[in-house]
Image 1 (cartoon, rainbow, N blue to C red):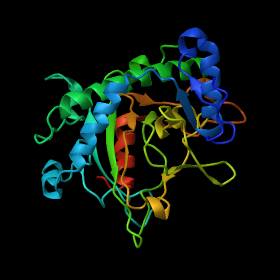
Image 2 (cartoon, one colour; image 1 turned 90 degrees about the vertical axis):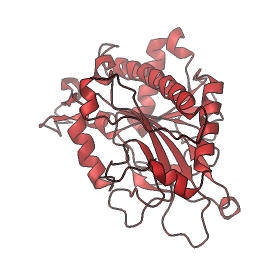
Image 3 (cartoon, rainbow, N blue to C red; image 1 turned 90 degrees about the horizontal axis):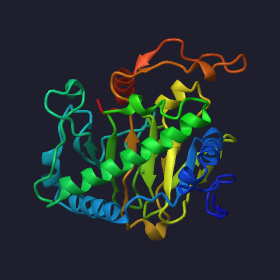
Image 4 (cartoon, rainbow, N blue to C red; image 1 turned 180 degrees about the vertical axis):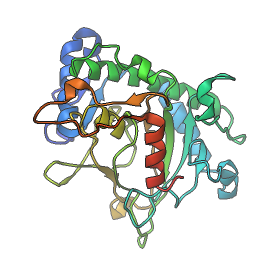
Length: 318
């Protein structure tokens, strides 16, 4: 583990990905301790190909720079934002009174013709105006998908499960790479860039944004900024994994606040990867996460697909 954590939440120490192969038990324990306390962890030296990351961000910026009428050609009304473009002013955090100040694009898993999951996982949409968009973003998708699998193996070890426990649960999972653009914020703007929310999915992997703003709600009710070291990967627990683990691993509220006055004129870009279970995976509380002190909160199992639809309705995407 790195000894530098001055810019992070109190108690969070970046975990170096080098420990994954050098001392997997210690790596898993450190990651698990951070997740159990905050629902968040930071991975340094993650090993993702920087060229893949940079090229993905380059294509992201190029798309959002297109005229509004061009971008809107790739919006599917009634599609729940599953693929393609979701315009500014639609997604709204659960129980919020104002929409988030953002627009985004979703890239999903490429499935072969005839795959049974195609019935519930939409085909990708690709903008014709940006050369290389499909290739660059699928490369970033695959890299983050593979990294997510490694993180889940560490989580499995920390939970006392077989290291490979999650492998089949996320095979062909309904995972989504979200390309996010938070435009400059006018002084009189209502709302915030992203209202307080928890993620729906299993785990989320977030590459460091160029502009600050991410905050996490501490157990004491304080909003604390998350400022990872340059090049680090932020990972957080989603509601599906919180439910599976009976809240042993918490899905923590977080938000993206508006910038300081001197930064209001700048856009913010980020590329969170929402790793999901396969649509037919049944989320049923893990027996070893049920104790007399922590009785089963979810006696009724639910498929990940039904859970996803339930939550998408709450945030006004369907």
